[in-house]
Length: 194
Image 1 (cartoon, one colour):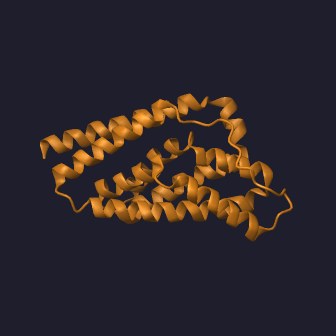
Image 2 (cartoon, helix red, strand yellow; image 1 turned 60 degrees about the horizontal axis):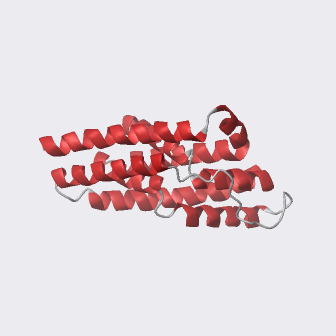
Image 3 (cartoon, rainbow, N blue to C red; image 1 turned 135 degrees about the horizontal axis):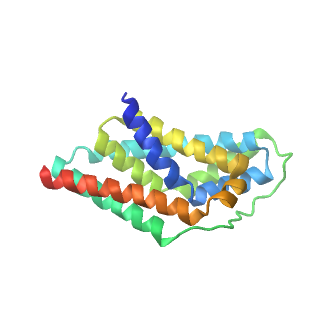
């Protein structure tokens, strides 16, 4: 397992997930229920998604190098465009019943299902698949991705509202989009050079 790859993946996934709907859903869930209960469900859902993305990326890595780099570049560029288009929902309410006194299994399951459904086909899942295809180190990519997703979920659950007061979500989106655009350029150059 390559620690540099794991750190790179974390550095890409973390800012990409900050402006995401699942981070906002985690914030809402954390404001309604016990934060630890919410984190258990959210963490499990993100682990499932990272595993699926790494598996998909490993399949992509079977493509010839030039084609793979072209696909990776196109998907990174798509990710950057999606972030810049501003698909952010500042106020998201999932209409979840109950209150802070709900028990661990119920809150964890509800949190798991909300994130599981919201994250399918999401930008960070696509980016994780790209990174798995690019780096050929599924363990490092999986761990880096999961840690990035868990860090965002933890921040959102524990103090997301304070973070959004300090850093506007548009700036977070722009930073993540810039990182993805840079990765698209590197992948394009790699595809052209062969």
